[in-house]
Amino acid sequence: MTKYFDGSMVELEAKVAAQLSDYRFQHVLRVRDYACQLAKQYGVDMQKAEVAALVHDYAKERSDAEFLAVIQSRHLDPDLVNWGNYIWHGVVGAEMIQAELGIDDPEILAAVRQHTTGAGADMSLLSQVIFMADYLEIGRTFPGVETARAVTAQSLAAGVKYQIVHTVLHLVEKETPIYPKSITTYNYWLPRA
Image 1 (cartoon, rainbow, N blue to C red):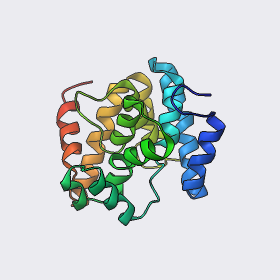
Image 2: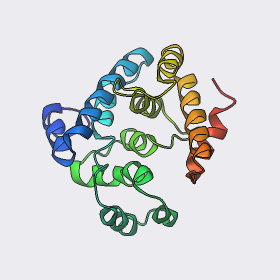
Image 3: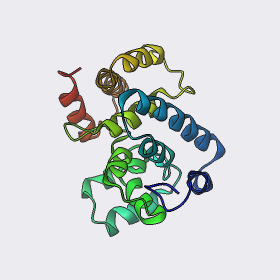
Image 4: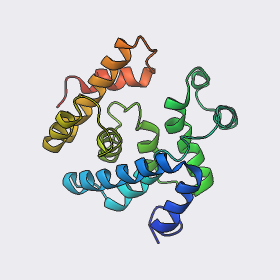
């Protein structure tokens, strides 16, 4: 039995696996492993980190129609309809996790909401751990990942700054719209770390 889910970790893994392709579920397991490593290093509740990591992509493979229905029924920010899965699976996915899995720990739900966009001052250590574990899990091979891992091993905050700077730079280079919370995250973390 976990403190954050009404069941065992094995049962939670099974519920998450049932919602995802094997490819996505393997990513989730690697994020869980990296999150536990970072949680141990930075003094974050290991069970909370494990649960948050296991559920962070719970809604990743849902249809647009499902996300749009939740945005409407839960009266979420109307601007969300202008975005897509990249934003929805975290921000809207947290609502699905709460409704379907009964996970209602505010810090875990915030970590899920923030795992793709980050956040400013209200980004807990748990949110930082999940943000970085998703970015750094051992299946990631993007240019600079080894540097990002080394930076994060030295300082979690420096890792968050590294990720948001490089993510925003990547989106600008692609001339892709940037979700406002990502800009807020960038502006908050840039002078820190």
